[in-house]
Image (cartoon, rainbow, N blue to C red):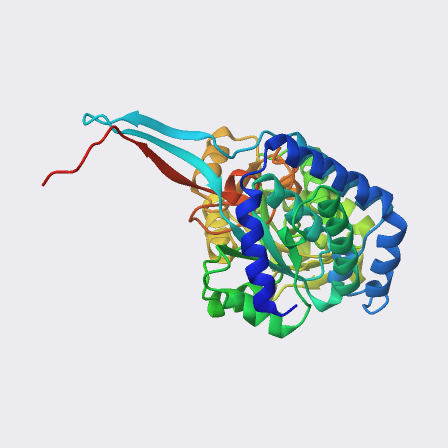
Amino acid sequence: MHLQEIFQATQAASRALGQLSAETIRGVLLDLAAAAVAETPFLLAENEKDLARMSPEDPKYDRLQLTAARLEAIAADIRNVAALPSPLGATLQERTLPNGLHLRKVRVPLGVVGVIYEARPNVTFDVAALCLKTGNACLLKGGSDAAYSNQAISQVIQRVLRRHSLAPASISLLPPDRQATEALLQAIGYVDVLIPRGSQQLIDYVRQHAKVPVIETGAGIVHTYFDETADLAQGQAIIANAKTRRVSVCNALDCLLVHEARLPELPALLAPLAAAGVVLYADTESYQALAGSYPSPLLQPATTEHFGTEFLSLKMAVKTVGDLEEALAHIATYSSRHSEAIISEDAAHIERFLNEVDAAAVYANASTAFTDGAQFGLGAEIGISTQKLHARGPMGLEELTSYKWQVRGTGQVRKG
């Protein structure tokens, strides 16, 4: 089937999806969750073909890899989405005008959602589930690194759709080539919104070349500020979790800002990172505080380019600051507006940080690892938006809807 024909079929499928009952969609999603687990041997075998073509040292390797446990987690997320109430048809506003016209603002599907993503086969499942729940059809454009994995997942999804007599084009996987990317970027009249998920390079390319509306899910350049009053044990746990829980994700910690008064405790604060083999790029003050305590092969002097870098690996920058003001200025300069955190016992500092830091998610005394649709109670996410129009932060069901005005009258005509 040619790309134009795929676009047309997906657009037609979107009109039918929006009319399905919530109970029908719930049944489809529960079947999809069961299929994700039942097809584990097939999915892992196909995923292994992709993994064999990538070096385990590549930061994308962890994102590409599927395991039985990860498929179980994906299935759990799908079941969570199935259990959530449908946002469709919800009344956002309702009123009657003095002339008798009754107005109702209601949630409706976006229509066709396009997603361009790299080595993240879990996205194929996540997007399918969220789009089905919100009555949207979707066009999926995965990268060549995950071609076998995405094709296998697509086959599982297609079998589930057919079992429920839904159009296979409701969830369409495009070929993993540049021609499909260019066609999707130019799909005026077929794609209602396009969401890129991946590197900053991919996101920049989509933003610069797309002729359809784009929601940016930006890279995560994530900071945590360890304040003068911060609790040491709490800081150890939060920083270790934010950095090492899963290094290849966008909410992983990239830069620790430490108050100069806490430099003597820096070796203890970062001891869990030393045990995990994290390479530190430390500024002059923090380097001196760590020298002789942190493993020397893992301790490097920081240069300017280490600040503002999304490492996606066991690497992290450390910057010494004199006060909260300097921490806020550093974050404002280098942040990607994704997730930022403060560890502090000073209530005034916490409130100022939460109010002044410009990011989609801002934390006090908690790990940035929680910036995730499932963790936020959204079931799953289609991406984490770092922009401010329509959606910001983890994008769940409501962010995949628009609205329309339903106007009921009794013969009113406008005069003048």
